Image (tube, rainbow, N blue to C red; front, side, top):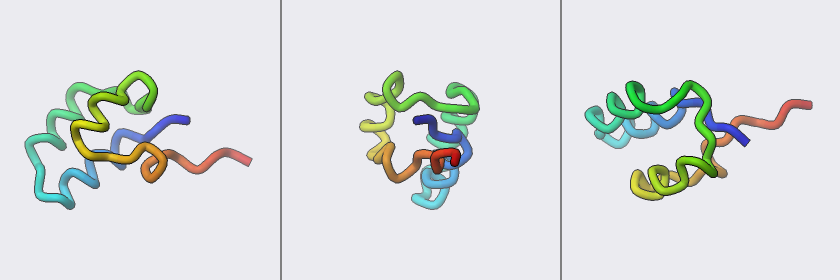
Length: 57
């Protein structure tokens, strides 16, 4: 399961956290591995299951 970075950025901007959104854009890869970045996602109060890309058919 991977998360598109732009989805994380969008959520952060919607929450009124533009500086965190900018940091995520600079520091994270285009496709975020939730297992590798579990601590960061928890710090940002993001649920990987809600952000994950839909599985391919």
